[in-house]
Structures are given as structure tokens and as C-alpha cells.
Length: 278
Image (cartoon, rainbow, N blue to C red):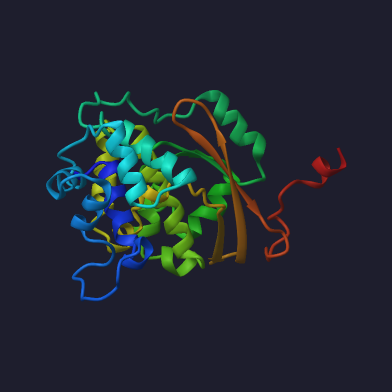
């Protein structure tokens, strides 16, 4: 994990572009997809060696002029251009970042009250590393047959998605779920670059090729509207939209909104009849 987010963006964007995108002929076999490093360097007016140092994370302090030239060379506009500049600014301090404040791994009494109040809607609290820190009975009922709570002392959404043998069987839209959770970890790394435990989780997941292939810091501005489709062992086909509510510090409350039309049992309802009448 030597490369920072800016370096990862440079490499990924260069691989996306084709010679024809920048007015160059397509002829000739290329060992890797996309533009060659030398071609981007010429377009940006920098040396290939300097670009190599940036892509390897060895030069983390490019000037504003260099950032602008690279953005033009890589055909970045709008949100892509803004995200590129933001990565350049934040990644320049990544290696010098102090250790991040300790993650809040316990759930406050107030948040526990909210979880209970949300019942019978399944809800849980997730931390910065996608660890599940607490949940209500409704979520436990759904999560247990899926294998999410096999080890209640260590529940992590990303680890479950990529590493648990049941995940691919019970998550019908596994690829979309994998995109969501890998992107969330990527955002967390940019926000808390000094969190050593977070980096350890990411590093371990990078050994899984499906996770490594989804690590795309140059796409983080594209928020994914997510829905989980389950082939649930007990409740059958479930479509679950999930909403995230910020709970302060580095925790969020995630609410699973179950689709009543897809649920096979009447107990899986978004709100109670009493709440509707009120």
C-alpha cells in the first residue's frame, strides 16, 4: 500500500484512456492498456521520470501548475477534475499524517436507544472500518442465517462480502455489494490515512483479487445508490434498500428497508400498522 490516492488515480486514469482519445493513432501492440507513461508526460510537459515518481508515491507534492497540466493531459473535467485536485492536496500530506484518533468502537446509550426505537425495522451501527458495532433484534434475525453473525465479536461488512463462503450464495447482486463496500473503505482510507488498523484491513482484503480490482480512488465521487438482493435462507427473495444516517464521530446507523412485496413472511414490514395509523 505504498501508493497514495493521488498516485492510484494517475495510474487508473492513464489506463482508461486510449490513444484515439487524445488524437493519437491506435497502431502498435501495447503491453498494458491505456496510454503509456511517456505519452502522458509529453502531453503534461513533465518528464517521464517525474511522472513515474508520482505514480509510485515517491513524489507527493506536485505544484498547482503540474496538477493542472496533468488534469488537462488526462482529459479531466468537472467532478473528475475537482476530485483529482482534492486527491493531490490531501495525498501530499498522507505520509506525514499523525496516527488517526482512535476509532469509536462502542455504541453510546443514545444510539442504542435509537436502534431499539427503529425496531421492527432492521438497523445496525457501523464504524469507519465497516465493523458492525451494534444492532437491533430485527437485524439480528435477518443477519444470523446469512452468516454475518457467525462471530459476533468481529462483524465486518467488507470482510463478510469478500471472504465469507456464504456471501456469494445469498447476495444475489454480489458484485454491486462488493463495489459499495470497497468504495466505502477507499473513502475511509482517504479520510483517516493514519488509522493503522484500517490500513491493515484494507491490506488484507487486497490479497483477494475481486477486492483489488475494485479499488478505484478515481471513481469515489460517483456515489452508488445501493440495494441488496438476498436469497435469504429463511425468508426467501428479499430486496433491501439501505439508508445511512450519520451518528456522529465516525459511526453511522444503517437501516435496511425491506420490500414487503418480496418478503415471504408478514413479520418483515417496514413500519407497523400502529405507526401507519398514527
